[in-house]
Amino acid sequence: MKTLRKALIVCIVTGTGYFTQAQENITVDDSQKFYFRVSAGYSFESGKTEFNNADPNELTGIKQSTDVTVNADGSSVNVKSLNGTVGAGVKANVTAGYMFNPYIGAELGVSYFHGDKTLIGRLRSPQVASEENTYLRGFDVAPGIFLTPNFKTVNPYARIGLIVPIAGHLTIETIARQTNAGGPGTDIMVEAKSEVKAKFSVGYFGAIGLNYPISDNLSIFGEVEIKNLSIKSKSAEIVEYSTTAITNGQSQLVPGQQLADLPVYEKQFEFSDDYNQSTTTPPNQNAPREIPTQFVNASGTGINVGVRFTL
Image 1: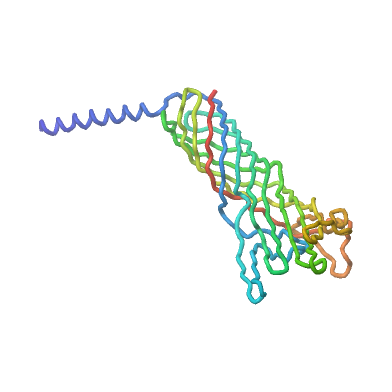
Image 2 (image 1 turned 135 degrees about the vertical axis):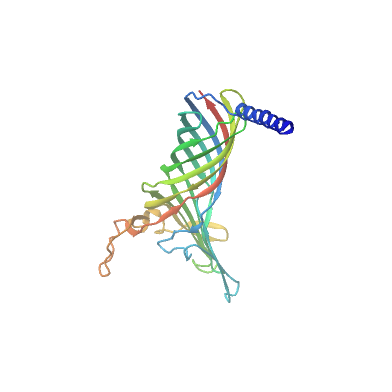
């Protein structure tokens, strides 16, 4: 019995010590606090899908979402499928938040995203070299919820919420060069830049991270963030277009084949879920062309680091 009593006393003392230590690692301040967070980070592509058709005028010879190489004598063709997102790039963020208690808060962030150029189509052959690249640049807002166990030192947390793009556009750059297309020794090069505008779209994000206090009001943090965002296209327009003849390294614009010479039907496009198209009447060259709705996959997974100020 004495041995049992001693064991119980040891257990009680040990348990009390662990409980006291755990309490010391948890902040018991339940005051309501505002905070600001500033961060920067980089996202990688995730949730890859097929790319959209970026050449409705069929100027490049590129088939949608493919990388095609024809060998020198034209006897064989290598075809690679291109899949991905426009969600890779650099991100800067400013967020304001409010803690309702030590464990849960609400926040609203504003981010600028500077997307990397992404190859979405290419054709290489003895006669033609064509390539399409795209990138996303713009701002979004992100309302969310902040959750934490509120440890006193290294403090884990989670964030979840919505992503709403509010400004910016998708840019598509196209270049196509055809050997001897202007006659022996004269190549023809076509260059174009298009911009795609978006309809109202909503995605979502989730993040987990660690916060480390430097002082009572300042801390640093690092986190892993996953975003799932599909942006519905509203309209597209070719904003730059030129055709150049190249002979012995000398370039000359080809008359009648510049941006001003394109009819509206070939440089402005409207995306629609449902539309009618006549099979007997030629299209109106002075009106934008209707094409099927497209979605831009802007999903990504990345790392953010920054500082947090508590008021």
